[in-house]
Image 1 (cartoon, rainbow, N blue to C red):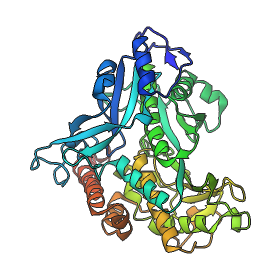
Image 2 (image 1 turned 90 degrees about the vertical axis):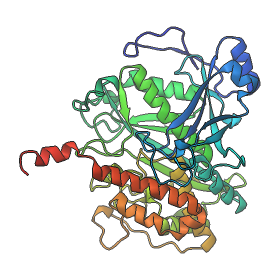
Image 3 (image 1 turned 90 degrees about the horizontal axis):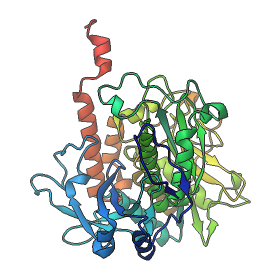
Image 4 (image 1 turned 180 degrees about the vertical axis):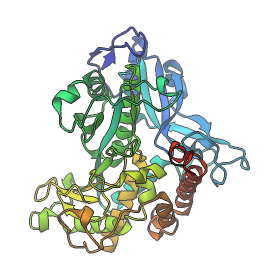
Length: 472
């Protein structure tokens, strides 16, 4: 799909679309370039926070050799959310001179972006400037290694994410002077509520159609569990494609909302009284095109492979939390009664469990991890879950009994860590992830968590002022 020509102010813009092929090859990109349909190629990669970083290439230069590689500063995997140069990373720093990484386009990801006129995008892998090996701490490389591990064991890792966010009537520009006065796009809880979501169709129709036009198989959008909260669902795929699609969806939703004078947030918890936003991860392993998780004779239709996989994730749940919930704010989502789990246990079709078995008794039986927030980097979350599950299969871990009922009230069971500080300590001492990811990766992301904790401890907040300005 391609937006019609002509653009006015972002607040007033209204684009229509015509159907055009989404996925591109170099040959079809050249045809589109020669026809004047595409003039810009975004050459990007996911950073530690899951944001897309990179450059805008003129399509002519990209076709003339730019598709082979380009370069970026290696500090892009050693920054915090505010782009501060964080000291203490071994991979990049002032001591090493902040050199370059090589960005190598993965041409299988080349696609049109219908919401940006005349624009295509390609996702890159990051390589060491000297050895041309993939950068170990790169999120995409971390996931690719676990996918390769699964394939060596005879499995194809299949995943899907459900991505939630809040839509506001405020523009991003209007919020730069202060965050007070956020106005959700609807007035009350809109979970499955058609009239409420009709009010958001100016944005959400564009989101569905334009992401579909970018080659992402969007299934549906729906209202979620609070005012202005929305969920996007798209078809499951192999784990790498799922992480790529998830990242493009976040980018597209932000840009499409911005183009209409709106804003969105993927924060795990933007308001104390409101439901948090999740990124539930559905997972299964396939062999020969068939689910390796399904056994019609097994309990709940679960195969021995699935039971071992789930047992591994339960055993590693406390150690993977930095990859599922990377910020101090992430842990404010885990509260009773707002559909975010507080217990890292499993249960069938139970939304109070951290690990929910869906599709029991059918060929679609799978594990849904409900712990990740919408703020998680999908490459890291998928890699962490896959690593723990594969460990369970390798060790043939026995699955603990199902726990049923209201798990918010369950006593003496495994809990989701309550703070990033606790999660960081569990990662630091994790033998599981030091084996699966390597010491360099664990130390890198432990350092990132420690920096987030230190910055939150350091900064004076509005909450501090409200509580203490007069009373202290």
